[in-house]
Image (tube, rainbow, N blue to C red; front, side, top):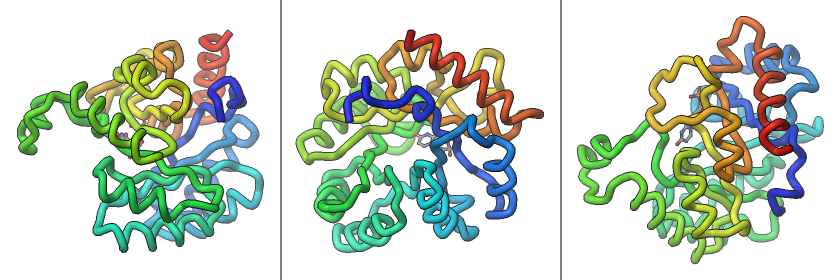
Length: 236
Ligand SMILES: O=c1ccn([C@@H]2O[C@H](COP(=O)(O)O)[C@@H](O)[C@H]2O)c(=O)[nH]1
């Protein structure tokens, strides 16, 4: 799907980083029609969130299963086959060649799209060097994007800070999905490479992943509506 084909409302993906299914269902009910795309990550997946993912997909919402898989190829492939049965739209794997290759082969014939996590948005150059990498963030993101493209991965997860450079490398053939989104004045938390929703869209991001600025807002629906309005304005 080309970016022009993505409905504006689907560009906001709300991360349901909540303790359980009861809390997640309450948040989904509060957000109502304001949000059409949800992300289920570690916290909720390990607390019964995968059946909820299936239920959400059946109800017409789009679902991003953010499990950031990374293991030997066979294990990744079998995990991808299981997630493909949930009806989810996106599944993340870490951007290591063996992992990406196994995931892409295993999702063939299903509607599931594989996203490769390039460099986590909570990392800066110092964090990468502390982890033993010689490359800085932008060089590693770009190198991994090139490998992902060659391997047929469907999309990339990066900070919006890298979106413009990634567009030049991968064109419009891959989805650019960007966490690290902070509306002006929002708390940064543990994110290090951040942008506002408007700047992320202007930089070329297709999808914006937003968790705490929505789920921890006093009025989550109003927070989501404000981000949707910012996205629409940036697209106009
Ligand atoms: O590089 C990455 C990859 C994934 N994430 C996930 O996105 C959300 C962001 O939540 P906020 O509360 O808006 O910070 C969260 O679920 C992460 O696991 C990411 O932040 N960075």
